[in-house]
Length: 306
Image (cartoon, rainbow, N blue to C red; front, side, top):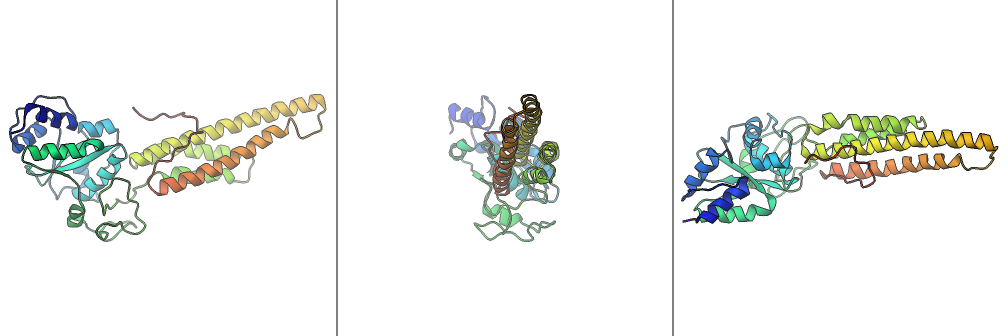
């Protein structure tokens, strides 16, 4: 029979510090449900019910994710995708056996998955990550240009992004993105209008933050970072224009004939244009692979939510 320390540890990992009187696995499942620490779902549910079920779990709230629900997916495929997205924030979804419904989920920190599985076994129950078998059993065609059949075991469908930590065979819903569009808009900088092109690109990158952020937590983070870079570019270009005006005035007043001082702002402008291109390419490579792109030289106008 589990001792009081094991019961308290289990609940603490799930999301609260609480005393527990559960002596069996069934009693622990009842306590989880009573404390809103679990999501009880039927396999015929959709991703809308999945999100409604997990959105209030303490660890999901702590992870700060946006809505993952998409009505085209059934609950198992949606849970596999949600697990992949939550893994970006070091949270995993575990399936518990023996619940009152088909698909009984809890959210735990990634580093404590193994410990939760051990504690569940100590209660005579079981906890596990969403598996390939779950995905295969639930897979059905997904529309709008992604996949039309489940991937082979242990693989992803060709051309389909699988985020780190997702269950094998994970199938994304239509519209899933890691924020690539935010960096693609940056190529507006190369409209052949000096200075204006970079400003237009920066505005577009910053303006896309709201719409791109609604496509999942990875997209939201990449959109935030892309917006920071867009505003950084705008700031530097405006400073360059001011420097150009000042240096031009000084050159006219002193009758300067050489490249300097007016050449310095021009060099800065070209340096920004080159840096912008490097950032765009690196950002597109990272986001197309489903990763968050880190840009250490961007000014943090928008900071990550705490």
